[in-house]
Image (tube, rainbow, N blue to C red):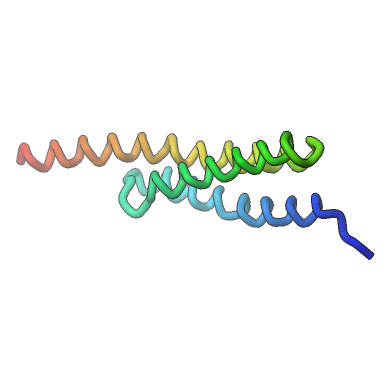
Length: 99
């Protein structure tokens, strides 16, 4: 029996998506951008966008696109938190220089 490739792709995307809520929570609690790679997260978003583009270019657009979008939203949330935390890091560095 041949398993539909869409199912395997969804399982892969769900595995990636499972890690992001933990990463987002860590970003919220840590209030620092240290230890996070903005470049890495942006590369992931680009990869997900190419996955969606593949659906439009080669495959028929189907339900799998929803899982790509979920992953993009999760990673984008962590990117937004990175920018917030980076600003907080800069504020803390300025306070440390004043002391």
